[in-house]
Image (cartoon, rainbow, N blue to C red; front, side):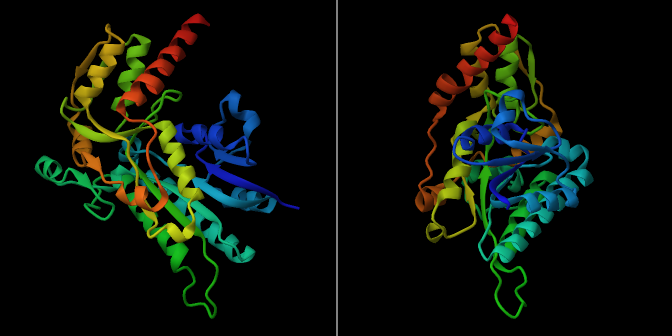
Length: 339
């Protein structure tokens, strides 16, 4: 008999590790990633080290587990995606498409919707210039969906694929089939104390903090006044879980903005230097990466999530830095020196 489980793809990444810690106590987890899990998480999930694009592997997982919820986190992130855009499309789109199809078919076979939770990104937005960014201070879900990166294009298209598979898949069939339950959050930049940045264009924020804690100089690749929204990693995980738990009748859409606080690069620098007075942080803009950041909104409007499923971040900027980021990052590197 198949065992009931929650599937987490991309489980070895920043969000995946935090999500395992959040869900492991009360759920059977199956995790999938090209990389192994950290040693401290190995007992909390049945980990499969493999490729999301391996259809035989996915079929084997379905034969062994009755999957109720899929958290599909696996992706090639923005900066790396610009270096290898074709590979990014294969991982981000083809991988998502295969998993959506599998979930839709399993939903029909079981006559019960499988929940498909998908993290999207601020990268789906594309502001044409800094003037527009200044004029449209807080952007709603349906505005400026004109991404300028392969990662943003991938994420926006996958949002649409999720909507198709949950609303229209096999729409010409004689009887309307049961379809999957697709739910999506659009994240701003994420700040994590426990995992290292992994190639996102918003990673100049966490990179400043980690470099300062290691006592290394850091050249920030955007201008001092470059501004985007951020949120602390615990809030990102809670947003995914809270959306998964929301009653379906409360939801009027499938894609929701969530955010924490908006900061300029200089404001992040100031907070890091207040905590690490010896930190050497310089601004050396990379014009190509900076242009991507400039195309993202200075802030995003998460009113719909707040109204429809009670979203509210636990970490404002003060608590994010003073209670979560700075003490935990400092402890991480003090522990490394001690060992």
